[in-house]
Each structure stands twice: as C-alpha cells, then as structure tokens.
Image 1 (cartoon, rainbow, N blue to C red):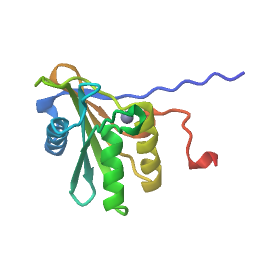
Image 2 (cartoon, protein in one colour; image 1 turned 60 degrees about the vertical axis):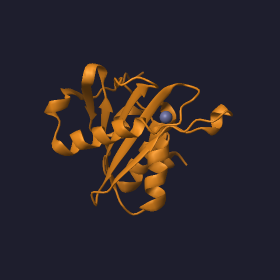
Image 3 (tube, rainbow, N blue to C red; image 1 turned 120 degrees about the horizontal axis):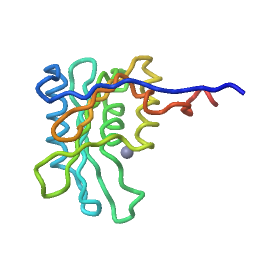
Image 4 (cartoon, rainbow, N blue to C red; image 1 turned 120 degrees about the vertical axis):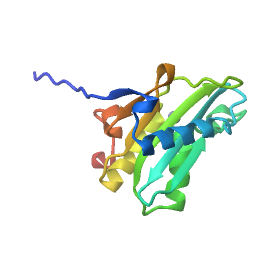
Amino acid sequence: MTQHTFSFSFQILDFEELMPHDKNLIEEARKATKRAYAPYSQYQVGAALLLENGTIVTGNNQENAAYPSGLCAERTAFFWAKSQFPDLKILTAAVSAKPSGEENFVGVTPCGGCRQVMLEYEIAQNQAIRLVLEGENGKVKLIEKVSYLLPLCFSNKNL
Ligand SMILES: [Zn+2]
C-alpha cells in the first residue's frame, strides 16, 4: 500500500488587494450576474474570461424549464470564448454570484461539470488558467490553476 496526499494553496484577498486586471475581471463577472437567466434557482452567476489578446468574454447561467438543458455561467463563457476565439489562450477566469433581487455578491466555486470543461481547455492550451472567485464578505479567492480543483481527473490522457 502507498499513501498519497493531494493539497494545494490558494489565496484569499480583499478586493482592494487584487491586481488591476483581476479587479477588472471580477467586476465584469459581477456585472454579468445581473444578466443571468435564473428564474428557477434565483441564483445568478457571472463569469468573465481574460483572453491572451486582452479580450474579455463574459457569460452567465442560462436556465431552462427542462432543468438539465440549462447551462452554468462558466461553461456559457468558456464555450462562447472557444467558439469565437479557438486559437486564443484563456489566461484568467473570474466567477461571481448573487441571489436574484439582491445586490450583495456571495462566495462561489465552479461545479464539477464546469471544472471538467475548464480543465480540458487548460490542458489543450498547455498553460494554467487562473481562477478569481468571489469569496465571502467581499473577499476574493485566487487559485493558480484549474487542475488544482480536479485531482485524479479524467482527461484525454485516459482515452
Ligand atoms: Zn457549473
């Protein structure tokens, strides 16, 4: 038997401690929450991606009466970005969330399905995608790569 341990470090910062480009990106994600279509969950999520040419792509959750037909904010943004700019690397992804009808943002982390999708592009572009995630009480979580969130992942290497 061999014992294995997985751990990673991440940062929790005050908004004002963020680098300007991260500050801008989380602000774009916050704006995107307000355009979400979330009549069922009443939980509005926004994502903003910084591409290597400086373009910012945003997305938000798009729900549906047939629940599984809806899509999370992260995947909406990632699929839109890669469908429009297939050759551009994604440098950073910011995600924010808030309950519908409220102004305060709440902590959020990507669901398992979105982690899998983000990891696919991180592997394909052979460069880490940084995550800037809305934290609690106005703080922000910085995670240096998607793969930290999906240990023992399934990828094209398994096929
Ligand atoms: Zn998701």
